[in-house]
Length: 281
Image (cartoon, rainbow, N blue to C red; front, side, top):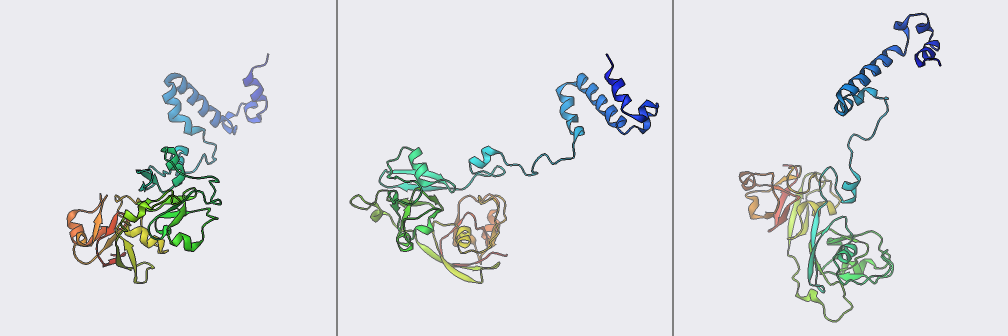
């Protein structure tokens, strides 16, 4: 039986002539033999450290990898999607529902008594109501049943709606009496936005809505990143003490002195008065 080394040498003119220094495979082969010898001596640790030496030159994957689990849970690079408190008045329960969760699905998972049928936004069986314009508190992708005027009057479909704010709802509005009559509507304040592409526009921002999202809803390109008050990318400024005009629940970036000097984080700041906001301090 011929030896494997002999067969390989026969295919290489340089090695057959005893000139292995010119063999194009000799350096790579010798390198691999040294690595395999180290693997035998060092075991798994040696292999883990040297595995990169077998690089094929091909890209093994994206630099910024996001696990499938992270995507399924609405997470990216370790950051969880924001969640909102939704009060189901007929069921007398409040749930924390992520902004990427369908309201109907979250309610059914919690064993709430909710009406539904098609689950794709066409039949209207899951219609629910809120005080005010429903577009202020939910985003619907797939609504084929409600018209714009009905939505502005507070109607939405739980089967295609994702939350965008904390709110209370009548999940069975066909039943007698409306529990929404006992729910006070959030007070709104006039906030003038300066900087970026806002054009010095004044909008009414409800007291339970963050300044960042009110601006993004207007289509303005406001700066932000973490959305939970830790990165500081959304720092804005007001005249005077920011404590006098906003409430921040979640600020983990600004010091109390900075807040007193007028700085705030739009991603966690809710208005408590009328004021002017400089988004480019």
